[in-house]
Image (tube, rainbow, N blue to C red; front, side, top):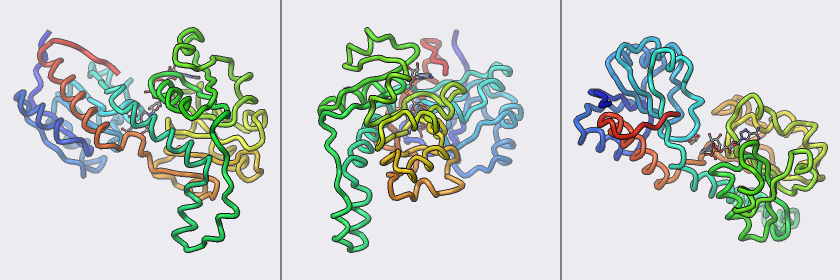
Length: 315
Ligand code: NAD
Ligand code: MLT
């Protein structure tokens, strides 16, 4: 079935290749990344396609104001900024580009694990404040021989495992749909969460934020971990309970946290991000030239495939 798509609005910063591919296939493209929520509600009536990254919140108000909208494309993985139920009720297709930023998110996770183990954030801060004497306080740990627990063994979790094994880390993990025989193929020993927590030196989470994963790393979990556990979240804010994490950092139960994502973005309260034991980045997991080019091309090609009736990717 071919699909007519005349006009597309791009409302977030997305690589120019997305515009080029759509235009060369006869689609009229408007890029406007400055729209307020109210302006988007007004504007959306003019378009039959919308492309977003994560800044635009495609709420039920936006969707209900759309008169001709047939398709929403998310140039990225998570579709939590799109009200998919409201879209489905109106028969609007929602597409994403899972996989386009996998390697970038995995590499940032590995960078945070390495940074935490050697206090790179605090070392850098010491140099910038000309306090060489800080080096005495910045004794690190080798990753070699340590255990990395990976919660969520999908695309990113798997790539993190493969990379951290090259540092000599033992990788263990849990995922409700990836069986142990499959995770063993990429070197991860599958186990239930209760067994995993006390074995871990580092925990990294790579799941969607869903009711089952909200506050998954809680006070209770911290208390069953080794003293000095380090945790990393490049998935979604809220998988690690932020208040529990602060308590664990203060008590010394948690020796460090690498955080790319926060329950509120930007955070309403920067206490965690400013904490000396925290290595924080402002949601940079997918922010590489390569990933942004890939997701821009993928989402545009998926729109074109749909117009030509060749393939359909749903989120
Ligand atoms: P994926 O779908 O390939 O993998 C997610 C895995 O989590 C799946 O295998 C699923 O079975 C598993 N899972 C679901 N519920 C679980 C639970 N209760 N316990 C353990 N595992 C569970 O997704 P992905 O591409 O690997 O992305 C993972 C996360 O990273 C998503 O939240 C995504 O939005 C996020 N992400 C963040 C950035 C960033 O910029 N920081 C970039 C890309 C992706
Ligand atoms: C995603 O889910 O793809 C990430 O949050 C990255 C992003 O697009 O910002």
